[in-house]
Length: 223
Image (cartoon, rainbow, N blue to C red; front, side, top):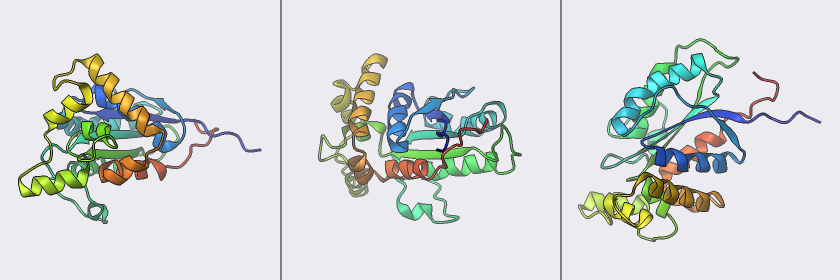
């Protein structure tokens, strides 16, 4: 009988504590197994901060922790989504935040020497279009989906606003932290039972899930 694999050790990075709380549930569901959370040395709040701090966080995790990987989630807001065409080798879209984060991570880690028994840090990145609250509403409101948002935005008539998404998820467009965490994690637990609708309606989540599912399973004897 083979020895059981040890849990992955992962750091989570989002624009807020709210999104990181929901992300933890979605990551475990996509992996199909529990993981151990590793806290990064730096914190990020908001899109610019995530992009700016990701290189330093990745290097810190690589050299100073036993983390296997990092999982990142950001909102697209009014920037480009990340369709499958963006996954072509060498492709980079300057207005796609997922492309920007991949490039920043690649630059920060491509020449790092092996550390802590691993050659490199794994990474998975998701892009919520236009915001994580759309993921939380997936399956509850048929208007909400990445294709509908992109089509409406291109026509100059978005089907909803980010403020309306917050109102629908939290019951207010200005939730306090406990309200927001409760709403986000309840939605994440609902999706965790079956991720197929979320993956179908939101390619930015499907990309994240695909990254996670291609990761190797750690050997129980590894450090």
